[in-house]
Image (cartoon, rainbow, N blue to C red; front, side, top):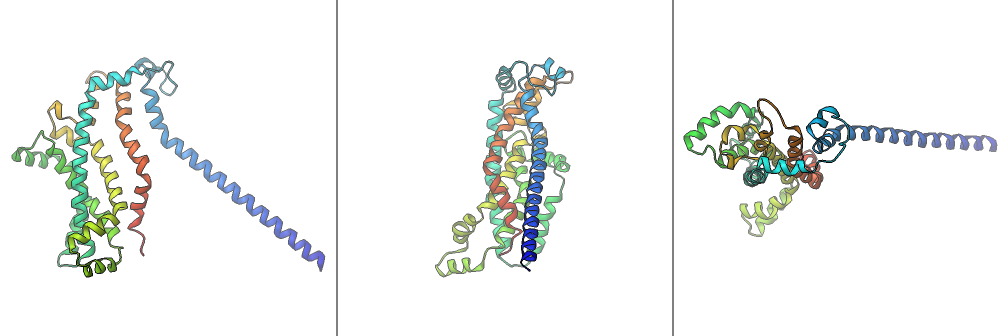
Length: 294
């Protein structure tokens, strides 16, 4: 009997050791797969910055190799030729104002839709969802005609208004889903203390919804900062061109200066990379928050 118990114990130990080895092997396999996926995902960005340090001849001769000599002057020339300083300021101004309007109007509308029950609420929600389904570029012609009649073509407002309008449905959808999970007791306690609806919104709902608002802000920043179509159609003045428009000066109908193009793209991408790295955790929290009940 003792020998049977000892053998059984040894068998359990062997099985446990085998299970641990299997789990360790599975983790190594998963980590290796994730590392390969990360490398494949990041390689285009790595290739962009490597190409920014090459000459045009080396870009074509060795497109995937390291630069033989690092051409730091490419970044200086790209900045000067494209007028990137002015265009970056224009992009920053338009993006900041558009984001402020989107967050304010989106938070107010989401608060009303998530915390109040009124006639026509479902219809209003449906219209906002429909707004997410409209192809943005299909509206270029009617928007051009409308802005021409309003006299705001070739101004910052010609970009700010469309950016805000097309980002609002997404902002309302994300923030409303987040606020819908907030307990009613918070508002009831605030009402007892004499707080009005705007006070509840400003002092309770707005701070509580910061993860969702951060998600909206980051998604909106990436979309506004990288937009090319609206800026191309609605802006003609060189002094009002945004960053994506300034990058097009390196390509003509006959040739493209690839070394300056890559250098300019590398500089233009830095703000978006920095913003996403700093706030990626907020993006994940905000995207997941509306799906969790409790």
